[in-house]
Length: 172
Image 1 (cartoon, rainbow, N blue to C red):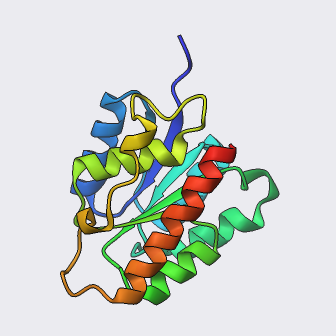
Image 2: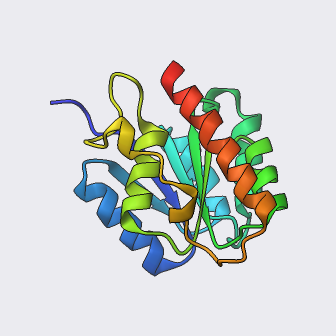
């Protein structure tokens, strides 16, 4: 049996944090949690997870600070980050990507979207991620949650991220 793949959920909202932890545990991940950015940085350093699901709006240190921490630590640069946040401005998406985030999902989100994005984040050509087929991991832009009047720049950035993350994943 293969070891479970370790992932950290950094989210200050207990309901979302527990929902994501339980669901990822159910599909076979070793899911750990952090309640704020400072705890997330400590847990990332101690646990060395393969992936992090990261909220931006957290007390202590925000998600951008956590991304900067990961980028500064040479031995943590392998950690792949999915930003999961209510923030969806073009500036926030661009900043997260520039700091190293591999994907960005706005709240509210569906379970299918979450599992597909985590599968893509954690997958590789030989292991697309715990039962998530490669063709199932790229939801159409129309499936993204968020306000119907989402800034077109955000939509364009997300489409470019899909292309880059998909290319990176196929080379992994």
